[in-house]
Image (cartoon, rainbow, N blue to C red; front, side, top):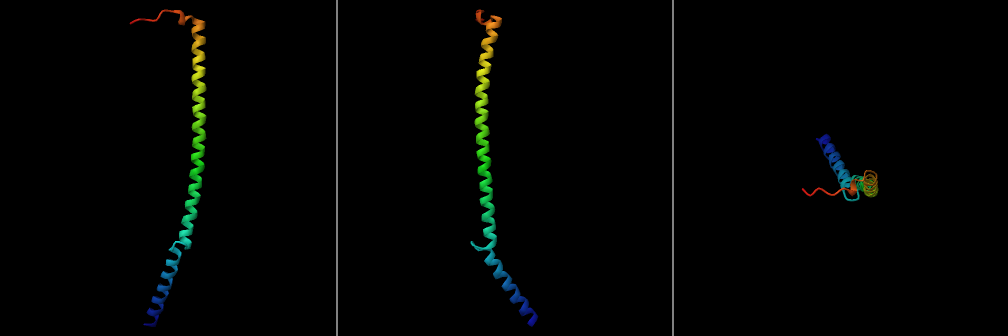
Length: 89
């Protein structure tokens, strides 16, 4: 009987420790908060990188379009295709 009482008291004490660890300021809650802050920081960094990549791609697309336009003008100038009447079909 005494052994059961000690085991019960031991279990109650362990439950109290777990409850303290799980409270808003407990160790487990603090660990989750730290992990959440770290993940938020990493996601912010990734978002920033994606924004920079997107901006670079937009600039490259603009430069490509300008280059393509220049090449079309040069091709028309070299071949004289721009001087031909357009097909009216």
